[in-house]
Amino acid sequence: MAIKELKVFVGSAHKEFGEEVCRYLGIEPGRSKVSRFRDGELKVKIEENVRGVDTFIIQPTLPPGDNIIELLLFIDALKRASARRITAVIPYYGYARQDRKDEPRVPISARLMADLLTVAGASRVLALDLHADQIQGFFSIPVDNLNAIPVYVEYLKSVNIKDAVVVAPDIGSANKARNFARSIGQFEIAIVDKRREKANEAKAFHLVGNVEGKHAIIFDDIIDTGGTLLEASRVLKENGAVSIWCIATHAILSGNAVDKLNDSYIENIIVTNSLPIREKITEKFTILSIAHLMGEAIRRIHNEESISSLFII
Image 1 (cartoon, helix red, strand yellow):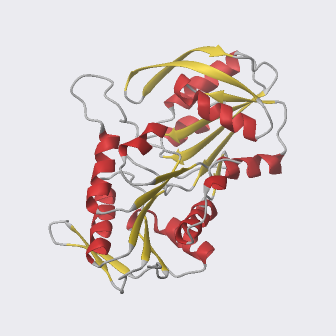
Image 2 (cartoon, rainbow, N blue to C red; image 1 turned 30 degrees about the vertical axis):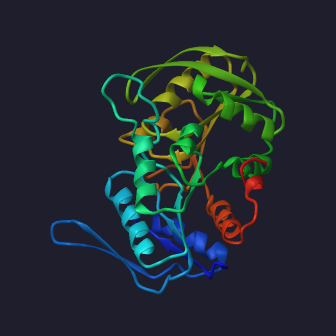
């Protein structure tokens, strides 16, 4: 049985981004309403027929927890309205940093989020730069984990940066940094030896690799408090980097992260619009849109086409 038309619904967590994706696709967002009962409980209503339709819901699951609840309610509403397929489009997958049991008596929250989405009725998930690749294995449904490397490469070509070294801010980011370095022209890589004594506090100790007299590009997936970047930039400066840039997909920017980064050695901070950036940012920040990347993935999934070329260039 052929799937009917495409409908994309936009959650309230990042409406501007969802609407940009719809403009890329040349469609209007699906009609829906998100409201609350007097006690604050969320209520979601789909306001058009979706029987037999290929449906997508765009909703990053950033804090507060209402955003994940809203996504689950959207999925359940579409399932009960007999949508043919339901794809959760999650530009930022919240709770991804808790992807393993690294100390006693803690949850594996990334797995719990996967279970919630699956049980709610999602047919597949389209995500961007998951914090850990193994999160895909937490799902029993198909997961497409895009990365933003093509967007970064396009930007770096426009500024024509040369003689650069891609820097992984910790050991866990080394493979991603290596892929990125290969994509932008076989650049060398360096790795910062980082220790995290407790959550949101990082301390950099040593640098593996050579950045002396070169432009250093720190490559990471998340900027939260900015502590990792501050420590990494300090080490790079001490080791002779002539300039320091940072590229990261998800700009959480908790607390006074923006102020700290503005006062750091980092000259240019390049992030995407996977999250709504509520903090007042300065000219040091460059925001790149990944709406066309996600929109093209949606189009290809709907048309049953391969999206492998979107994963990495």
